[in-house]
Image 1 (cartoon, one colour):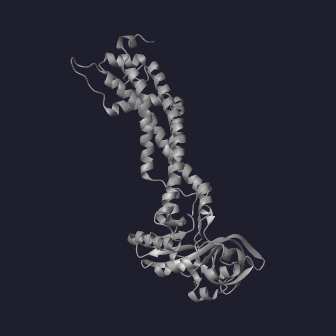
Image 2 (cartoon, rainbow, N blue to C red):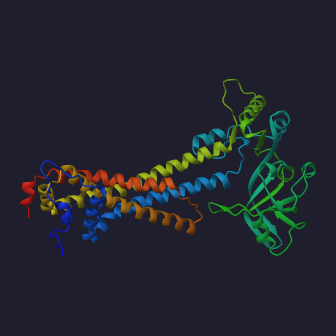
Image 3 (tube, one colour):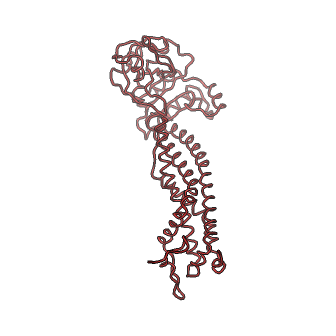
Amino acid sequence: MRPLSPYPFMAPESNLTPMRSGSHRTMNLSEAVAISASSLWAHKLRSVLTLIGVVIGVAAVIAVVSLINGANQYVATRVFRLGADVFGLSKQPSIITNVDDWLEFQKRKRITFDDYEAVRELCKSCKDVGASLGGRVEVKSGLNSLKDTNLRAWTPQMAELYDVDLVSGRHETEEDMRGAAPVCVIGNDLVENLMPGVDPLGKEVRWNNVPCEVIGIGKKQGSALGTSLDNWIIIPLTTYNKNYGNQQDSLRVTSRAGSAATIQDSVDEVRQIMRGRHHLAYAAKDDFAIETSDSFLSLWKDISGSFFAVMIAISSISLVVGGIVIMNIMLVSVTERTREIGVRKALGARRSDILRQFLIESATIAVIGGALGVLLGVFAAQLVSWVFPLPSAVQLWSVLGGIIMALSVGLFFGTYPATKAAKLDPVEALRSE
């Protein structure tokens, strides 16, 4: 039986065979990996402690990337439901991130019903044009009530522009609009909370104590980022104005272009109509906002991108700490294995062989930590999605990126210890105890 090597990190005897005069055998990759694995296995606890920093760093990156990707997909498909050929005209942008901008927007002229009719009549490239107002109201039926319901005071075109599907009944009509009819279409939350087990069609509900007859029931949509998409009531815009007047609220005018390819032409046409109605000089800025689905998504990506950059920066601290730990452990390993290095050099190992061995060892530690970090990150993202209403989406590029990031950390922080080992003088190394 072949005797065991007295040094736990030395290569098998077959790898320590003296080289022929004038020749060198370069250590192959599999041999270096085997030596590295045996070294890690010989010090299990130390290796595990070394992995922790890399595991936490990669797991944090994977979890953050998965959650942000999931949020981006969810927002694109369910939150901003405007189609690629639909755009909105309003007094101010839907999302305002600056107080000074908000104060400036309050000085703008409101969008009126006359503006809506002008756009509807004059925009030749617009296929459909609708107008809306929104707010939050309390809806009651008998003794049951539901607060914070999204009120949608719409013209008949809005239901088609926003693709509101019904499970029963009908949407409002032009006749309802002209007569300011006391009718309404309600979402699934109102059905379940106000009239459970009862057919709501033809029944009366009251929004802010204003009665209306239910003529349609919306299809269940679920929730978006923890907010229900079924807690809403649609009434004719004229019905709202009849009860609350139309002197203070600014409308939102929504238009559909002939196609997604020609949406910019329609946007430009509506812009010219509104600039003319507001008597703006050629060099004056618009005193209204026009938004497309791309506008919303671009803003969302800017916000999520900033959040992503901050979280990646924080997560990178764990990777740097993990890299420093790897470098420290590798320096300890070089000190412990000085005599082994001397024996290998005496048997013909070149500097490049020693350098490669220690680099592969540090890279192996990092890649194992990266793989464990990917698994932990995916699990953490799925756990967050399960506990909280936050969607997640794990993508292949993020997994590969996590592994490559860990490998880079291992190679970077392993370079100094590997170089130090490679430069050891074989005579001095053999004298080491």
